[in-house]
Length: 264
Image (tube, rainbow, N blue to C red):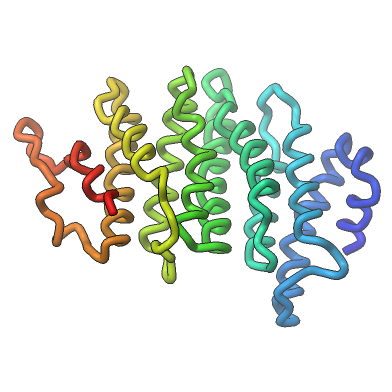
């Protein structure tokens, strides 16, 4: 609590001290754990969950523009995961600020000119981002919240950088897969941009880069399952939505018909 309180009282100094940043970020999961042990579902009145997330977003926004291996990113995501288990849910505006900062730091990170260790670390960041998005969705398990999270990921599908597009498609597929298996996930709320998500993924089905086309097919598969769940159906009950590639003899989504699945 002293580490966290010291940070909240002196943010300017902390932005220049990497050791203090890590001390602050690593204190948050411990604090959340102790709160849960005491059967508390909030950190208030000692600390505001919103104030902590705002501080985390500020730290990420002030990271150096030149990519470098840093534990601040992974520790930030771990802190957010711990905070997501407590109430109240984050305001969407604050959550958007956090997501924009994190996704820029991770998706736009250059790895080609760096060593194997740096590339492995970046893969760890991507896995951490998948976990954090899952935690934020678990906090409010609805299609409305899923759409909010996907909008931030899909922003990067328009990037001119192939690596950034690959990371975005991979991340969206992982989030959609998580949503389809999340117990208690509420599919009754509005999902007005489902058709747009289908279209954007569908555009990458025939991408010449295999990693992009494969991830796009995976994303469409999980999105189809989610849309079928909204209708109380499963893949076996909607076999007419599948087609067979006679050349490769593998099943692929007949994504041209997915608009029918999304219709109400």
